[in-house]
Image (cartoon, rainbow, N blue to C red):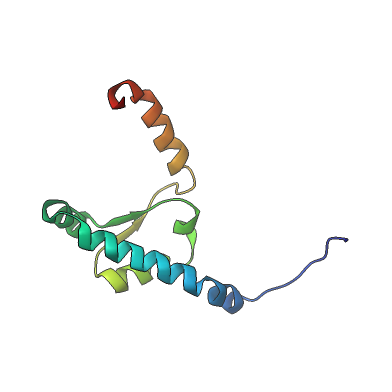
Length: 97
């Protein structure tokens, strides 16, 4: 068919993301529970860094902060983080394998 424009509200988007965001928060909590104490103390001090497209979701950092009681930061260029990290990994691949 032909393309058509559909308008959706912010509340409709928020409702559709409720379940996946809950799953993300549960995964964060589970990961933190399994983190060795020496690393957990670093995370408590320095906080959680959000990267990628999800980091740009309005209010996600605040929600994670409320649920984990830890500082949450958004990377300076969240969309570039994966590519930059992959590039750094390639630069040191000989040390990894």
